[in-house]
Length: 354
Ligand code: FAD
Image (cartoon, helix red, strand yellow):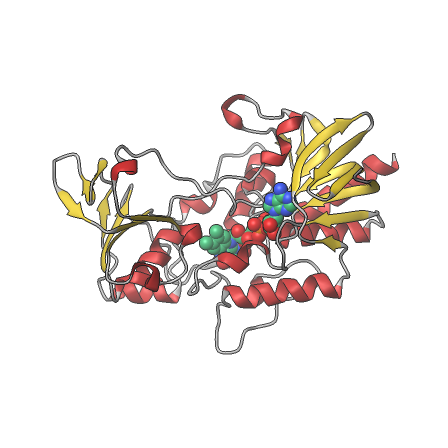
């Protein structure tokens, strides 16, 4: 028989969002546990491509309580530096993390929530879900994809140019992932970069700091009933981090419009033009990893879960943290997750105490 343990709060996910939640739950003197499927600290940052660098300097990429130290020789730290910062963070604050523990489902259980895992269950008065998006890559429905015949990777599976060495490569997607992976490949690969609309680079002097300010200003305007400022999207889609800027300046980042269909060994545009390709890399985004919430039946029309801040409207004992602007402005960033984490912990303290 598997045991069922009790705590006041279960946090699902031990990436940056789960750690920020832990920091504030501790300050509220709540009893909690963080359950993380990953075997080692660092969340999604352990799995990104080798050349990925943050789009903000270290000091602007910090979780609550502890500044990220600068990385020697790099204004914009790499993913390995973020992993070591997160590892140090959870140790420094002695956060109660259990790994690897996969949460399979969350259920209503009278006045409590029951969290079923692959190593027993937990009962808690509240749950914070902080599972990120990396684990649910999104692929658009494009006719002919199954018949392509070559290699297809999502950005989540891309690590380095060696995976497509010698191939003619199509990179699909006009966001940061698409531009960065195209820049990674542009120097040594026969590359076609395909975007749905012409790429919109942010001005070279704009980085994550300005994006955070824009996301916050938008949330404030919407909350105050003022006109939508457009937020980050009003500035552009692609942060011109140094490798992207260099490739663009060398004329290597010219984008073609989106093709109409995939054909064996290549792609075809609506006018019948074709391009040969041996590999396609889909930089087409991610969706929130929320399958563990299915037993709660929270999805409304169009699959969306309604929230007020981080609190789920149809299940007030459940908070969603770090999934994007709908759960707090810039909450899917290192610097942005602190504020919604603080608010979630405060609301939970009131719920549990009152
Ligand atoms: P994750 O890091 O994905 O952590 C979630 C954790 O939950 C993981 O450890 C996972 O194993 C665990 N988990 C998932 N499902 C379960 C389950 N069912 N049971 C138990 N555990 C589970 N942000 C910035 O601030 N600056 C940047 O420069 C930046 N660049 C980015 C570049 C890319 C390519 C991407 C994709 C994102 C970038 N971000 C950036 C955004 C964001 O900081 C990261 O996506 C970050 O990893 C999100 O943290 P998280 O804790 O919410 O999710």
